[in-house]
Length: 479
Image 1 (cartoon, helix red, strand yellow):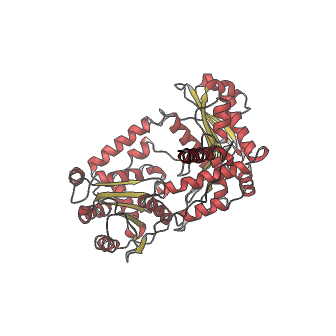
Image 2 (tube, rainbow, N blue to C red):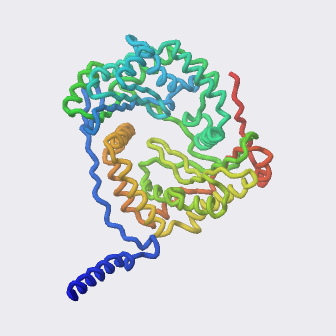
């Protein structure tokens, strides 16, 4: 009996010791936690083939579902539009799909795709044309032929063009309804110059002058296989899918060589304060900044960490100092933007009550000065930013579709195919000193252009504190 009691007592003591062990290992601060090294992430490598007609094809197998997804990039973009035809690229991208093909009208195409539970979409944005296709693997061959027909033989039906133009005209009529839209549009003009293709806006006159012939000419100029990149992901065997692509696209002859012209934008920005009156607002929108960078810049990884420290989380500097401690804004952002082949903007922005407009402006400028010079990034901030970026990296490459989307972008903008790996390695290697040096070099509050959008009554006292404020005219030209 005594032996049994002794045995039970021993088990109890061991159990208590095991339960208590975590308490002994408890840390008092989150910074004291130790993390194991991140596991190696295996990023799938696609098969890359260039057809005889110049078409670049990337293929990744994914057998999770019986579907195929195809994405395409076409070397075109709204930044190549003539000034008198602003809106042409977007209309071409829209009506290419809605207008159907020479053998299959748009409405008939809609019915066909609906019956197949498939989709085909086309568009043109600022820097690229895009097209996509999704279907069941059993319909892959048939739907792919339709997809090529849409890209190669669009009819640009007059009635669908009229609908698209009316929709664009309606958007112009409403362009001053949304304060965020005003901020984006007018700040782009201040950064790139009002005549730069990166800042121009459709007008009734430019859209009204666009004809079906213009769409046909645009398509003829830019839509050729040697100006396209295809990315396929799905439940296929690579060799079979590639043979099918060769059969369907291989008959499309190579187009003429084309070198896109340089797209102009201003390189010198005059600091100043600008105002847009919008009296139906209850808050003021504030944005300030200057020209940013491209991703190929040597300081890219360092500045990514700076951005994370500024506004990468709810514990970041701007959220903590301006939102939480000062209560000036619910939403505040800041950092240096990166473009793929032209600079994005570096900007600090927030919305605030009209009576705290001046305090908001001063708070943003103060934070820019602090991170640049008076309170540069600390070792702890850099360490935490790097951990956050590296831990979240896996979620950007956790599916073949996400990987393919990135690879298409790299291929289109002539970036190395291993840019994903370079990103992770670059973040890991960056030092605190490099982050501080890059921050000081690329955040320049003395060069800020400041834009305020809001009601005159509430924002007038703040604007009165500046010697010179330039008021911007955002009225919509009638013609």
